[in-house]
Length: 240
Length: 287
Image (cartoon, one colour):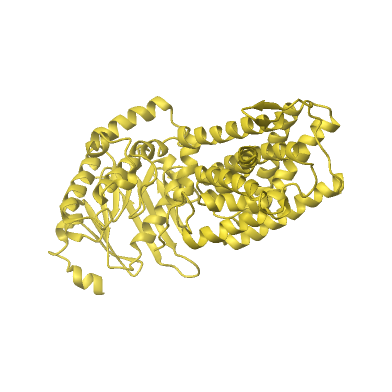
């Protein structure tokens, strides 16, 4: 059986800040419609990897493709327009804007028609009813969980092919963590491929289709969640 | 007497408000205090002077041409000077803006000399309303400044460009991953800055003589107004400008007029001690 063409392909990417590389030799193919999760200990390069994909950090070597298109030279806004949306771990909403403004500003510079944007907003609000009734409320007044919902919703306004999530459960109360992962699963159910990095291994593995273990900036293992803990010992993988 | 001084102060405040909004927009989006704001104001006045006094065009048309001309000029200045330094420190950009200030000011000096010039504006008799003397220039100033403030408010609150400007000012990285091209927004910001400072240059040229130091006379007060209101907050800049205009003007009742800028320095000093974030500014916590 032939493999489907990857929706997101990372080939031999190395990147870092200043002089050195934080990640190197990263090659990943993300299949359309899957939830692809990257786990790893602190300082393993997970955040650097997702920032490279989002276009916030330049890949020093290697190539990134979104479907058939090479997006390596594209800026972050150009990548959004190409279909790659990113939800940062923190500071992921504009706190001085209303919920409605947060949603609108996320689509107004993508060259979409106003009607198409309005229709997308309706679709997004039906997916995130938690924020729908309060469009005039300032985002800075929302709780951590509600902010995370707004951040997802804002990213979804761009109608992405791939949604990049940087530790979606970070800083959330346990009550919200399960809710957030259920929401990710629901978003994925609409056909959006999810690429997620996460510290909460248990919850991440619950919804993931495939998982990569990143240690010291390199891929240690690519497997399915079912194999973690059965065929592979996570503690040994983390510690090397 | 006091009511007249307060009125004059309000008008002065309105002239200051336009470049103060421009300064605060630049600070909000590019995170540097644009020291060249005074020289830009001077350049706007001279552009209007060329159209009005040399080309004999009506003052309103001259002001419009000056606004377009200065907007184009500051976009080019950004491309040549500020854009290559975009990721450098605030101090680097501040020093670069000082360089721009000296270049613009000396270009005006080279072209027009040091002698004072004035617009060819119609002489209209002052009106007297409730014991207050209101002249034509003051009405023009108030109307222009209010229109400018209203336009900035509408742009910032009710247009995609304004929302994007606020987004970039708030969190440039998040704005980028929401599809907003920062450089495009910065160009539009400079266009607005150019139009506002050109309008202020024309108003300042109506209020006093046009010379290469015209804008320099306003720089301290403009900075004081922007800081007083809370740097990065356009509404605060307007509030700061009107407050300083009135306070500076009323101070001339007790101190010689030549020393009225001292009031601005005192206002900055006292405010930085009591409320460093300004009247409408918010405290930013750095992690």
